[in-house]
Image (cartoon, rainbow, N blue to C red; front, top):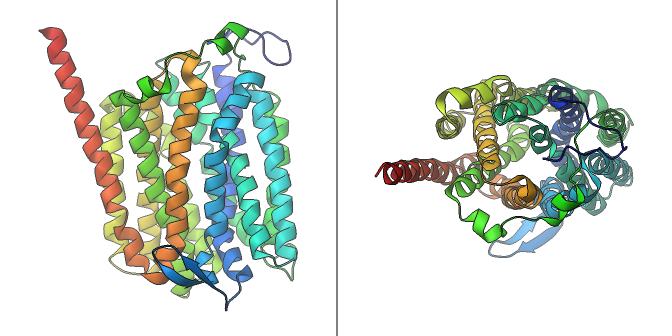
Length: 423
């Protein structure tokens, strides 16, 4: 880690970690509030804008109504995030975290403004295109969790990552409430006001970002790229870290993205959807206050395996009925399961690379995560419309069991290495 000056030329504080964690948690709270709002209204906006009579031919599936593509705008966000992970990380390697994060927020403000315009013009495909730009914006702020660890001691890193993600608790409360409040803000056109609200959130975040203090890499550190990615990716820690975060996130996204559509199909209104999504996001982020400590006490692999068990619990609950409380409990379990798998995977990844390798390894990790999440999100609307809610939930069983198997494999690998060292 560099001890050089930051982008402003001022020397960083002796220990800026707590300051950075607080500011990054606040920025993540604002960014996640916008995304939480977006999770509530994106698919519903897609249904509203879709041509009710249009048919499209999909490979291996055949003709589907355009309304089946209602989750496409949200899926395009995941595709945009995947596509921007490497450029965003390499850009920040050169200019530093503060400038990079600020640029990402400006991209988000412009994208949300264009989405607002697309809704006012009733253009499904322009709204879908805006998803790509919002996804690029998301690629930048997803690195908040890694940035928090860059001035932290090894012992504090799991807690730093966890506490930054705890900023999502604010989003859990504010996001769905803003979605409910802002949907009529530019009446009579529904949901345009929601994206106007996102513009304001991005601009406020830019202001807060100017106070973070994370040293930039020195010229020598930028020149040293470390080991080849192929060598790093062969480590068991890297494999299991990516598997946990990638399949945990994809499984969560598949169910979460389909939930608003399933609830509307079951005759629940937007306020009911907002209630369930709100508790889901609380489930995602409230555990962050103690996940880091739990990792230190019982080990990262055990935390990941508990996350798998919670996701399977979500499947059991959601398959048992369509009452509001079952949607609520299933999505809470899904959120907590995601938290344990995602923070566990992120913590494990921090052990798999050296400081000079951080940007490319983080970028590869997030590229794989968002590529898989893109497929899951796009599949959600198709599965929900063509097969049904039960199929959406059954689809996550195999991926989460794969994570459990990976954690067992790594534990066996570690035990074998310890035995070899002892011999």
